[in-house]
Image 1 (spheres, one colour):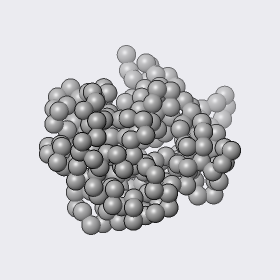
Image 2: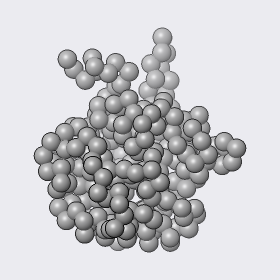
Image 3: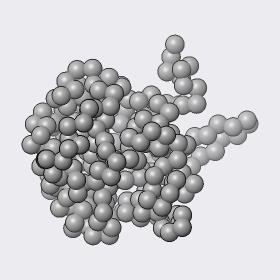
Image 4: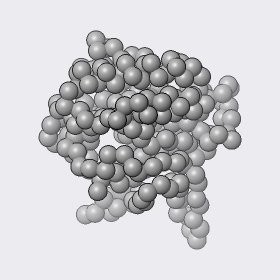
Length: 242
């Protein structure tokens, strides 16, 4: 049985060079397209035995984490070559600490081989620094150093911002959704780090299709929003391979 037979609500998305990724929703007699993000496919186009995603609740939370909800993300990537390490509230202000207890957690959906020796990392970046780009940059750089210390098998590291909102969307749920606007200073910090370290690249820069994809003012995703983002991210990372 093919992946599309097992998951009829999912569709594979192929792209190359630099594109604007669109959400495709099929309805009776119509196709709805929604902007999801912008990215470049120039980063590390080679095969890896084990890619470890490191993140927080937007990534790993049941019914709201884009890696685990609905099977969307692993539908696109080779799931035996990907694994997840996550913890609630685990921003770069915590991952930077090599003594942080979450480093010792079991990996989710572990790689079939080299699970303890991942050769690539996707770091999903969040934390408490608001609009302070220099603070984001400092903690991202410290986290990279920790990754290289604890996981010396890792080569390239892709940095990915928290799931934000399109610039024109204010996204208020009682107050401004934190993830929606923190996405942009985080991206600026990521680009600064990538410019100074040849082993670092900016990964996908995910944004919600609509503010309704947020569940609360912190920026936790709804299940539907997580599936949408999981599809977009899975399609992107699957197509990083040659």
